[in-house]
Length: 212
Image 1 (cartoon, helix red, strand yellow):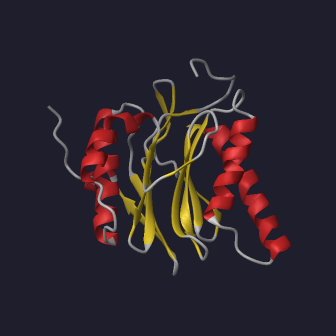
Image 2 (tube, rainbow, N blue to C red):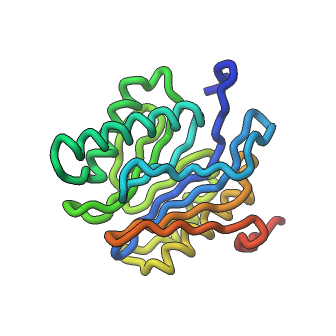
């Protein structure tokens, strides 16, 4: 979108989710921008929508926060009605339905990832326009265009948890180096059957990158 609505905040960002053997790692930078002005340096773009299901948000901060709140409400309702935990596929389908039905009014690119007892770990990408794609790893946001080649080259199926965390950390750091709308710190979450582990990487501990 070339113009923002009055009072709207644009979320130039880098978001990412990667499956590994036994779980999924999601990660994002923390910079929220309004044009060239940095509105927030430490935004948390990893949003919990259920116990083992998270979404990574890119696009308009207002739009994505509202959509995530609606999905979280419906997942709680699903649990009460069906007496069981929702799957990642159900959560992703809700995101997709809302984004597609409102595609002319929303600026929202979402990655949904997590663990459920039916499918295990899953990663779904819902880009602008409201389509849905199940992938082994997904990228989103303005910074993603700088790291697709690196990610295609580096990704391996069935990585260990440690390898996957390092892969996401390095990828997001590379994007933050090149993309003016990505920056701040890196927030990660490791989602497995047992728990959700949050990892914080401060700006002074980011992996060093070549700056030219």
